[in-house]
Amino acid sequence: MKYIYKKNLIFAAIVLFILLFLIIILKLTQGKPTQKTQIEQSTPVHTKIVKLDDLKPQYIFYGHIVGTNEIDLIANLDGKIKKVSKKFFNSSTVSQDEILFELDSFEYERDVIEKTFILRDLEIDLEKTKFLMFESKKQLKIAEQDYDRKKKLLGNTVSKKAYDDSLIKLSKAKTNLSNEEFKINSINANINKAKAQLDISKENLKNTKYRAPFPGKIANNIIDVGSEVMRGMSLAKMVNTEILEVKFFVGETAFTELGNIKNIKGKEIKVLWNKSKYRKIYLAYISKIDSIINQQAAGLNIYASLEKIDKGDPIRPGAFVEIKVEGEKIKDSFSVPEQAIYEESFIYILDGNKPKKLEIEIKGNTKDEIIIKGQLEDNDIIITTRLDDINQSKNLYSYK
Image (cartoon, rainbow, N blue to C red; front, side, top):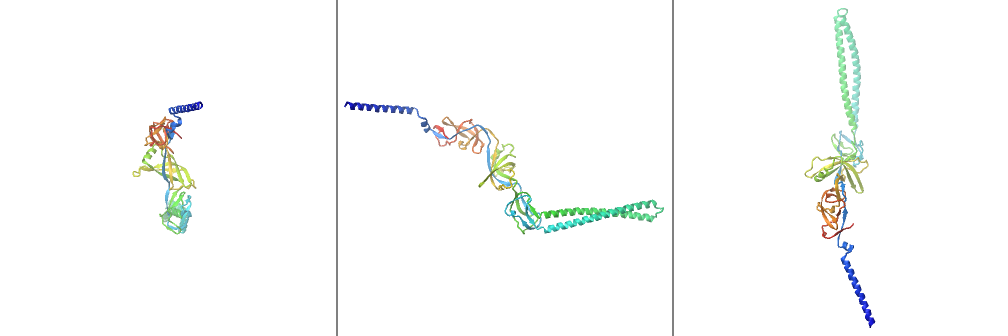
């Protein structure tokens, strides 16, 4: 009996010891929460450490490629189309001086031949007249010598009649020479006129073959073999594909920001053409700006000349492109994600384990983020998680 009582007493003591140990452990745990318990009672947020820097804003616009030289192909002559290049029909790229189409040249060839014969006949007449003028000069010299001799001997061995006859011959010789000189001048004038007419005829014959004035593409073709054309008729359009520009519209506000760029004319920009699997970036330089802001559209057009395009490059007028313009450096600025900004005027930083509101001013954009200035300091930890639906009285902790 005593053994059972002693055994129960020992068991009760052990239970009491265990209960006291558990109470002590529980009190210790309640008085000093673990780090894990603290984190579980806080709200997790994404953060970013910001660095003070001199950042360049980037402006993005959209526009189209345009030809710098687009002309109407005008018929220079009347006639019938004899031959047309295949490239004239399928809008292929043509090279400078490449033959686009030909007129029937028969009449123009005949005209050149006729004008050539006219010029040759005049040149023959000129040579004949020069010979006659040479003879007239000889006759004039003889007449002058005869007249001088008879004038000295008049009243001695020369009669009055012989003297008068020598004077008449001298007068005729002078008249003949004058006529020959006049005729030569007239023939020379006709020769110059004939040469000019022959040049025109040769130019017309040359123009029966219409050549591309520059490298480019043909559009709006209205002719075919056998078509009758008239001088001055528009036959097609041609666009220069070797020298291209990008044309893009800039809103009035954006243009005001661009106005801060020093020497905006000549400014280098990047032009991105992304077509299916083809993607290429071109360099271009701002060449001209509309002088007046379009009040209805509230903006204006800017043009930039692309660097020389390779002959095989597929980009063409009409291509839709993205334009990136880099601005001047903004000193002592910060780059932050867009979602960190509230109402375009403030952000939150992590101050200990609490959010702190700071006022900021938006200055521009980088490729992926927003450039700001304000109450931030170098190495501040900004909160990038949106806090709109978070109880800001709670503790916060940063996680990646």
